[in-house]
Length: 621
Image (cartoon, rainbow, N blue to C red; front, side, top):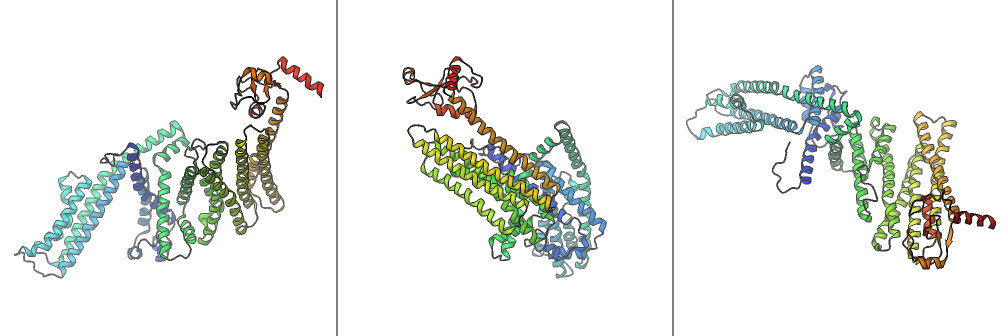
């Protein structure tokens, strides 16, 4: 549906953004109703008290005393209350699933219903004023008609607005929209004030009849739209599968933006209520608002998505701050997913939704600490390639170096601070050790990256390449791999110890230990062995190559095809007759054992020159 037809001058992107924002705004009430229904789904309507309402996610924004009195003054049947309760689910489904055109119609009908309520209120006020007037009405003067005419014109204006919003074409329907003019006409016809309530009751009855007829007339069209939507969804699931169909539905309904908007709205209202109560600490008010807002699986998912968007925003701002190229760090829309999954996993594992207020606040503090550590790991993934690139480049400004090193200092200090805080908050167990190992790994990797950056800066200051720098870089990476391996082994050993000797095991903890043993221990050991073996093979291959004489280098006047530098000192000749710097070729062979120019496999090359060189090496040995 074209919601904003009068947006001249806007680009297609701006227009789409406004339409998406309007659609998300119109669907948010559906999520709010679903949240409130979930929280109070098992509550008997006769048990509603002011204390229960005060514990709602929406205290402080509405004066709900009148709602409590309304519930207690009516003898609502339990069956009727159940029907009304589940009708909320139907309304939620309509607000969340209907197309935008149908959704706009629902909101227009809701607005018209509000205008009906306003007309009812104006009618009751008119009757109350007439009870204090003279019993006999004589309209012999225009002035005496002013008050009656004012109420009559007001009722007519409300009817005209309702006709416009509903697009009603029936003449009978347009007349019936003005049913609350009946008490005014009856009074002007000489009806006593004490009998006007009868006319008002007749008007209310006609209004209810009109609403009933209108609903029964339009509901079949709405049901048909729902049936068509179900058929399209069933066809999508049949053709594409359940997983792809869910993804399409998720994106089409913009559920991520919708849940995030819902959580921000509820959290903002809760924060306002907290600050009205004069909280001494902003941090306590913040975490209390988060705990009070997270009351159902929907709000928990909304919190996770909000954390994901915030993490993604922080990652993008960090890229801008340090001047990183977006191509160095993939921006495929999945940033922040690690933080979201971490939050949901920890909350479900700890049973946050079933906790009391104080326990929930304490557990959410711990969860947010863990999410912060995951965010720091994501920031490290942004920093690492850019810092190494900055160290190699000689044209980078000093301010960019300072910004990158400042971020590295943050990534070095903050994980240590988080580890210290968690040590003071939690007792020693497997989960604490896993969190601490993750934080320490971030700091260790940051130290490795800074060390490689320093080596790269020093190397660029040398006029001639120095082969030792590559060995130092490899040692830094190898030491970091060893530290990560030790941390992972400590987690596995401690987890196995408490599982065997302290009977603190579960199926989930065993799965986590197996996962950690394979991905963090076994694969790191294999990676370290492969790296050492590749360097050893490259060193052996380099020693087996013939060095080029200075006369050959001067006669050829060639340059190294790897670094494009001149051959001012010794160079090596491959079996395929290509010449390279020894240290450049060594770096290349660490990655791939082929010639950089012709991609000949140097492990299988067995030319005459290599045979002679091998014989010479054997004789020297």
